[in-house]
Length: 347
Ligand code: HEC
Image (cartoon, rainbow, N blue to C red; front, side):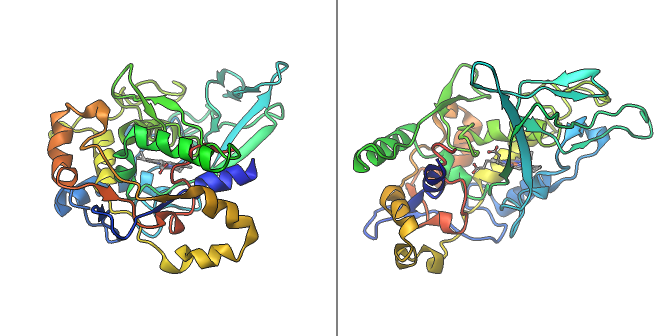
């Protein structure tokens, strides 16, 4: 299982030298990849960096006050050391079950998710006796942490067609004589109710869309409700009106800004030293990695992800960058971004 995890996490995109496509723009310079102008990108980044407070809707349960707290190395949108806790238990049916996390001295039980939040807004001056911090009971004895992933360049990953990823899984399976088969999963596109897409973001490929992921993160990392995720995890201690975040004068809410920030970000550049195949070849344990995960010329396809293909806003904003040419992922981009590129199935 461990090998599988390593293998799929380090999925590598190699562009062939005679490819007619252009490498996706790279850099940690906080500049736009060309999808929007730099000023717009910086406005979006300010939203991503913004520190939320109780008045903004922070919590009641949360992990951090801004996206940047966990996505910032070496710049906003990068990775970080911050890991979060997931727990659960094995039921009498021998299957994995989500945890039951009591809060407020068992006044309420948090169910329906494996995530356990590290922080809470209560007790505070207004509600000194409400103790809602989550604590893991001994019965939840399956525990793991998930480290923060980088989001830079993820717009290019989003623009890879579902069929390309399905093809990759099939190719991998065939070439490894069924020893390693990437698992394609379909996940809901939250902003397009009833639609699904091939999961590609998060350690479990739990989302296909950056807007969906942003809404999910805003709720589960920061406790901020939006049009996409309107329900608080708990109402205890909750004072801000719902949804906590609403569209501003520009008709965009924070989730739109986050998604646009990520979509307009440049990908991490290739680290040529790390990416040198010779370096890996000398280590027998990584042979399998080279064998299974080197993909020639992974190419973006859609102008907009298909679920928003008729969305004028998306076409307008992404048209310029995606229309004239297809992009290939920078060669072995994962060398600088060691986890999480196309995590097709993790342990
Ligand atoms: C407390 C830390 C933390 C905060 C705050 C946080 N994230 Fe994350 N982020 C993570 C972790 C951990 C993962 C991997 C999660 C997983 O797969 O379960 C992740 C994954 C992601 C991904 C998927 C990246 C990929 O390439 O697969 C996106 C997109 C993302 N976060 C966006 C956001 C946005 C937008 C915000 C702010 C609303 C945010 N995150 C706030 C920790 C955080």
